Length: 214
Length: 242
Image 1 (cartoon, rainbow over the protein chains, first blue to last red):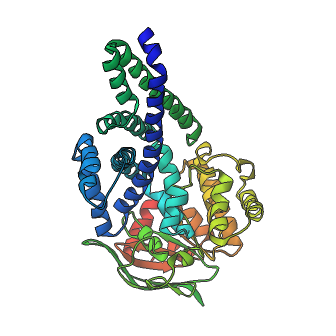
Image 2: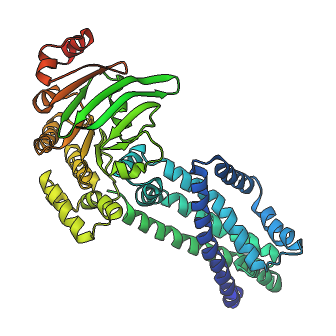
């Protein structure tokens, strides 16, 4: 107990880093997901292929390998120089974007074809239809799967400790080995992750209730 | 002077030719009902008029625009043609008022207050002014379809297309929708109505088109077509539905 209390300020610094990376990565992940979903649904074959290859590669390789590839692999090229936090955010964004793009695509395709027809018959273009009619409905519908991905992404950031980012997990390791209080430290770290994820769930449930389509 | 001119319209879905050779002219302010057995191609015919279905061959001239020409701005042409669907297809995430004023605001750049005023007038016309701030999901089928009509009218179209507008409704709600359509016809709207409501066709239509197997088999004034059909297939169809 005392060990946990002593470690608290240090761990909270790590939690800050975890949240910092998470918020930026999930934001860019969402943007990437949206763009890739649009490419995937575009009526132009090469664009669809690009999107599909991207999703297949990301889903077909472990996140840990992606982290090593971007931080060590890309950085070994002479013209690229990424610090570890930038590389970490980049990797997690690109990873979350691939999964989110599939969620967004499924959400869009779940909207009844009649919605598009009604919109097009009024004179809206395909892009306007997507923007005003389809996406607002699809995004509401995919909120639960979005929350799910956000939770996974938050937990994924713990892998970034391997490239020396001082996130919650990395600081836990440092504290555990410095104090030999592994049980107390890792319990504390676990509780911190749990609280953040539980808060995410509560926010999501609240939004879901508010955004329900009557 | 016809407002719609269809010449040798053909439409195939893969191997399946749904419209075989359709030619007809529709005059301004004319109300035309299209009847026929299911699978006869009547809905496809209607959907080819505003190119909701790609046209395989033939020509459709709509209010002076060649719909078959891919160089035209089809979105612009569609603004002149309202469409009402069997399944209503209201936008569930928007209120009734927003359903009606969305297109005028976004496509015609009408100011919000002006669009609201006009939308409320249209909702009053279809008897649903008090539902303006409700969501479509809170309305009955008949009410939703009347909102869908108001939504289409908000763009001030020259032509209204109705694709089996009462087929998905409970019987007691059919009347309220037909009444709105009747009022529209009396005001001089050019209307093409694909329908199974023979009573409506007889009473309101200027002309009835009977389709079967991808062709227009027979077309005539409702009285003539219903009371003295010429073609055997028309006779057989009418004997089953009347």
